[in-house]
Amino acid sequence: MIRVTCDACGASFTAKDELAGRKGKCPSCKAPIEVPQPEADDEPEEHEEAPVVVAHGGRRHGSGRRASGSSRRRHNVPHKKSNSQLVVILVAVVVLGGAGAWWGSQAGDGPSGYSIGLDLMQQSRWEEAIASFDSVPPDSRLYADAQAMRKQAQDEMAAGDRRASMARANNLYEIIKRVQKSFVDRDGQGHFDPNYVPNTRYLLKRCKEFREDFPDDKHVSEIRQIEQRYKNIASLSEPPTEADVRAELNFRMILANPNYIDSMKAIDEFALAWPDKVEAAQELRNEVRSHSLEYWKAVKGEVAPMLEGGRLEAAANKLATYLEKMDETPGLDPVAEAREMYAKALGG
Image (cartoon, rainbow, N blue to C red):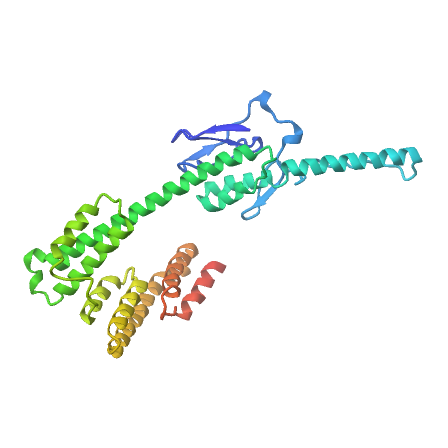
């Protein structure tokens, strides 16, 4: 095995000898790295070479050997053999077969899972990499290395989750501060806005969401102060009015990135609290559906030039976001044209 050290972040890991000279990305910081050549006296014996592993688009990893780990030679055996010669041949076949079975138990899926795991780590596909390292059997010579890389993949995944959680917390905090400044306080003019109370209720709703989702965040104490300040203006303990829901929809359904799931949840909450206002609830749902059509027009306006210009991956990502929003929202269906364009983007 070759010890590789990243010049960018200092992280170190091991790579198989047959990967010497190959370029890739550091599993830790994604900086470009190159696997160095092994020392001359460290060349592995022939039986330790990894088998061929074909994964992800047909790329080949390993030394080009057969999956059994042993090279096969053709023997020119005469057609006629004496009985003693046949016995010797049969014994050899049995011995070699046993050796091949032993090698399979040692190498088997071990090198395959290890090699594929390394490749998945370079793509930051942590869960798949962990599963691949888990497939390396305990009796494989690569088991210890696989467990070490599994731990590294777990650490990277956990670090990524923490970064994602922090990003969501910061985003929600910015939303709360913006709503407070621009739609509630308004430099002292908020009290004259007919939506002052509904906007304040929405502000308190997002504050509660922040506390529940990010109880250890550094901004929690400030969020509690905001709640204390406006607790006499609006209350989440009272059922939402139609004006409350409309105010929330104004915030949720921003055309650039609408949140239809929570919009529909707000309407359902209203319908449950006011069973006699069926028509009002239905009108609100129709407004969400109408807005979703406007959203599709905006998405199509962006995607069509991408498809014409051959930017298929960008088009597919944009369409996938639209389809996900629609498919996950009860009561909304994506435009059929969107699925057709998505299939076109994927098919090239």
